[in-house]
Image 1 (spheres, rainbow, N blue to C red):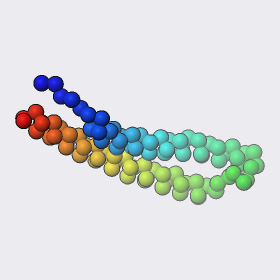
Image 2: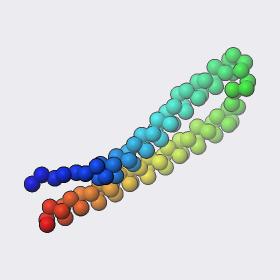
Image 3: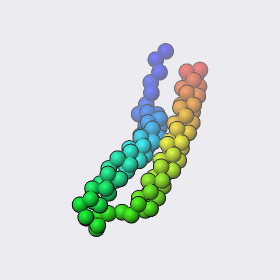
Length: 95
């Protein structure tokens, strides 16, 4: 018996993973580009774009913790939705 997976089910499964990947990308962007651009601004004397080290460290640390929370919640919602979808498909096949 063929199982048809509808678009809402696919969205329900992919949405938490997409949000988690966005959070990881946001953190990676922050570490890679903001820190290096801050050093370039300091070297070139562009103090209007320079962020003090304590503020930058606080931002990176806050971004890391937000990323942890978003990724963990995304994985929890993914697994919850996966189990829910499998149960729904099993019950649909029994009938």
